[in-house]
Image 1 (cartoon, helix red, strand yellow):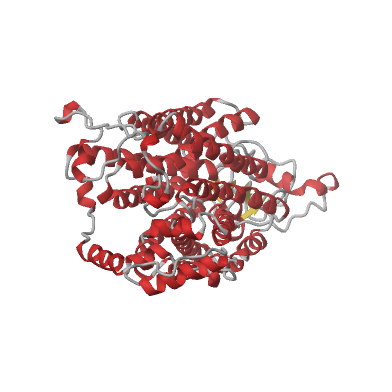
Image 2 (cartoon, rainbow, N blue to C red; image 1 turned 60 degrees about the vertical axis):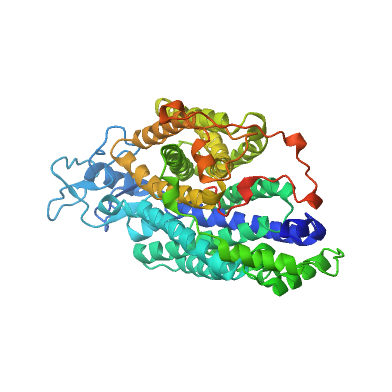
Length: 574
């Protein structure tokens, strides 16, 4: 009996499947808070040079209630940029003569110099942040964004590491190891004494976060029935968006970054308690030839789901066939994706689309404070638009196809980003920006499916993994690009918008995969969607889905190939 025939016997979505799906949904919420908490940990606030720190305006009764404003008016020059949202310079002050006696009616307009006694911060909204505590302003102003880029480097390294661990030592063990790194990194971040420690433990948290998610996401999809896999995948994305709500609401009431960090990191410990009750992936056990252990696992799950199984699950022929398959399997190679012209063009095109989707998604998620409305509600709404986006993507890909959805939504999202440049800060700018977020959230889900259908079977997992690496690069670049706003305010939006428009145009050159016979060999992969300019036609043999018997008893259960390979989504998703 094959694994695909065993899952329906266990119940395609029984009590055990409900347990593991609930677990990964909770994990998605905490994963969102881990990834995007830096938005509040490193929130920007007004800062200025600390001048005349001992002056309290006792000699000037009329200025005692606003002594700070009086000192700023006398000792601080106007901002360096004409379009600055702050009244005074953030990094410079007027030269203060030796022995100067403060007079609120003076004007020290003279030479500008860098801050001599550190900075003061506006604490009306954020009591403390990593920026205010570690003085990450002026010359050190890039560290806050760099720390978030380092977080995404942790994603990149974790994807490589745990993808291998999950295949070598099993999904369950790999997930528990990732959970340990995640918990240590996220909780210890709270007690960072400087930005270097903060960045290092954020890296560890990201490393464990993505490792746990990859391992468990695969484990979950390998135990639920094929007809439930699309719904389970999209549900994980929806719960990631719910993490926005939890984080925004918590940050709204906790304005000190260390307290907020501790509150949102401790729930990671909750994830350890159900972990021992997880069963190892049946598919993984069978693929490794651990037939007896696989059978024991199957019977434990069946007992939990109250299902009756036949006395014999695996015959000698099944065991022999699996052994021969393991011996004859040839590892796919990344080189196969670039050997032939059409395959290379499709691979590069899809890598660029992944990079842009990640770049724009995380760029918009981390810049909600620039919309000119309340930071917390802007962040809340930013997460809220993902839910209808994912619901739309679930149905639209089957109605309008992968290609046109990807292309048009990326074009609309890019244009929305560019349009916000010309809209004054306020509610309408937020609305247009959220239209862009809606589109990118939808396409970020669609390209997972699109990519796995586009690549031929021998290199499908390799192709998806390579595209995932491109997405990690986009995540690393997004905080750095946001820094360019200090040079030219509209530059990040120009880069996000134009790159999304280009990605949408390039997507039009990809073949449609909906209803098509998916390529099974490298040759079919090269011929699929090949234009005449490359010396060939297109191979788009239509599959009549109605002729396929979806009954699992015949081993022809209709499945979505997107879930036959392993990867993840974070910020969605992770």
